[in-house]
Image (cartoon, rainbow, N blue to C red; front, side, top):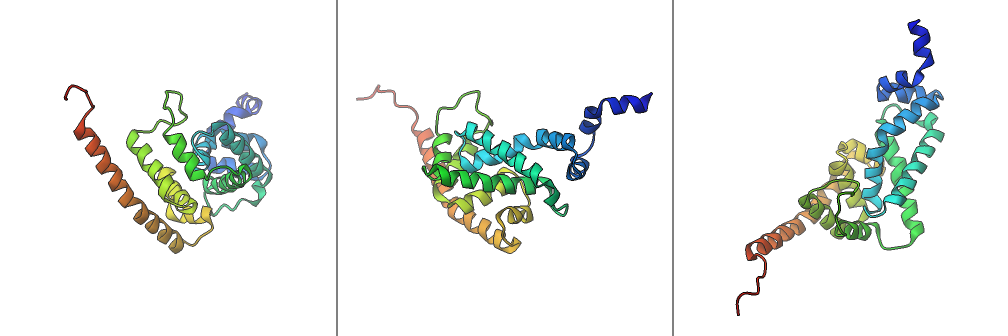
Length: 212
């Protein structure tokens, strides 16, 4: 009775297993397992893509996420269990996002990111971020090149380990550490300037127009 019950509702069984087990089943051709993986990783994948192409391009990001998941399913048999599934998935998504940026032939991704950060903020923004975090990423988008920005985003925005960032970027661990170090070195003086400007603005207070 119990066995028949479990077999009649495979969705519950799939939902209960770990991501590692779902990946193993998916690599053996189980579409239901991959669908469950897609549900679990879609929010984080969307955030990674938005960080790459610009926060105002939510519709484009959704398309890229869908394309990334479809490609991952097509290539699931190529997945190397030595690495995290998320790292492999992010690698696919970032490459697709980069291809889309080239095809659009518009402003650089860093400018799009910067403009969207400063656009009107509303309650329906896809990801809730504080003003201080917005300021950091906005400044990073202005002063860093694409590789530096992507490295910092993966390391601190997505909280990947250095070796995982290296895997996504196709670099050695030492090379990735050097890249992160240089990116932080470029960014920090600008963050200090932003902080000083904000402090001056706060100290000055609003103009009241009451003095002659």
